[in-house]
Image 1 (cartoon, one colour):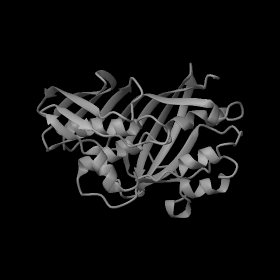
Image 2 (image 1 turned 90 degrees about the vertical axis):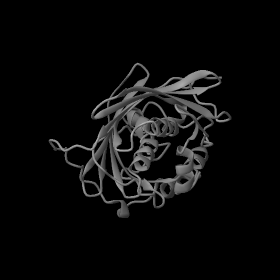
Image 3 (image 1 turned 180 degrees about the vertical axis):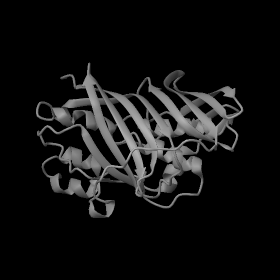
Image 4 (image 1 turned 90 degrees about the horizontal axis):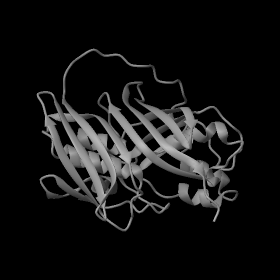
Length: 286
């Protein structure tokens, strides 16, 4: 998957019945369904059962089983509540008759209220930085397997502020900053931009938990898997314009890494917040 059009098609589910939808899979190079895809597709399924005057403001999800790339995913939407201002939906993603993921989302009418936000970190602008694909060229001979993964074409462009090397064994504070945007123009549909941001939000989170431990373990020795993922949408934005993903990991314990993300426009407007806990443990030796 290389283009925004392909991403839009991936996220636009086939409706099977009033509350049933079917989605295809992005064929990931790592062999299982990408968590961001399921997040975005489940949001698409929920949104299509909600009145058009309401937009998502939060979603809370659990990853239950790894997704099988060879099987389509069925999304079953439960219309829990339609209130005066808020609409609540629950979505279960199913493969081979078993739930692999569940999610609850809340949608709200556009309403005025109190307004404040934290300040965006002071980091170099995206124009001054290389993409992660360009950065990987500098270590392709030292880490060819990691290089292949980074060279996979994506519909989202990432420009990390802090440079990354997969074989670097220097421990670092659990903070990172990544600029991101869709690789092409997107339709002027707010829901589509929210779904695309949900897709992109699953990148870069778990690796933040490992930064303080790189002196004792290498990324290639670790097994990563998202466990849960929550997201709040605060203000309007466009996914085809630059967004700063400011990430930190307050804690890692019990084979789990806890990560947070704040997403800002280039002008400093806070548009979304993300929290995720994921599995991080050494791979078992065969």
